[in-house]
Structures are given as structure tokens and as C-alpha cells.
Image (cartoon, rainbow, N blue to C red; front, side, top):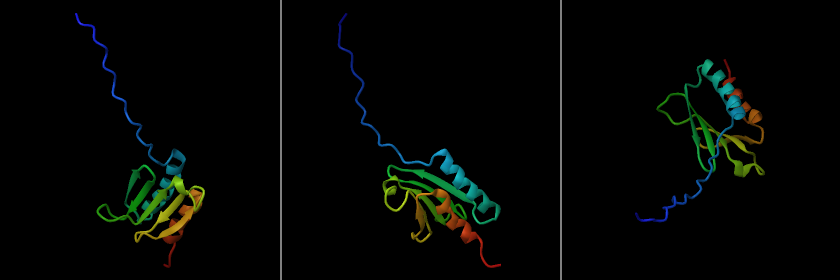
Length: 114
């Protein structure tokens, strides 16, 4: 019987953590999303978690580009604000530190002339 040294497990490089929305943030976003779905404005959404950014994208129809993107960028926490709402054309509609205040831009767009 041969006594060999055990083969160690390969050292894994640490995977960079992803930025994601927490439970409270998702609750705020989904509350606005639910109102817009009930109004017939929005129909679908997608969530993406990346290394430097988390995105909640809103669609009118599934096969389209997103109408709005709600972004969370921790690197901008001390500058312009952690959260941003980006329009379909890529313009930042509102940016800030408080998610409730940033999302008010979406509710104002729902109220329009009759």
C-alpha cells in the first residue's frame, strides 16, 4: 500500500460580489410597478444583477426595449446618488439617494392630460 499525500482542492479565486436590490428596495419598486400594471401602462419587467450595477427594467411589451430602467450604482453613492431612473433614449430622468423620491418621476409621467 502506497501512502501518498492528499491532493488539495484547487484554490478558487474569489468571485466579485454582485450588486442587487434588497427586499425593501424591491418592495418600493414593485409597488410602483403594480400601480402601472393596473393602469395598463406596463406589462413586463426584468431584473439584472451585475458587478457594478443592478437594473430593474420595465417593458410595455415583452419583445421591446425597456421603457424605463431603474438602476442602483453603489459607486455613485457619495456623488449624484445611488439610484437613477433612465428613459428609453438613455437620458437620466432622475437621480438621487432616496428611492421613493427617485421613483416619483414615473408616477408623474402616468398623470397626463385627459
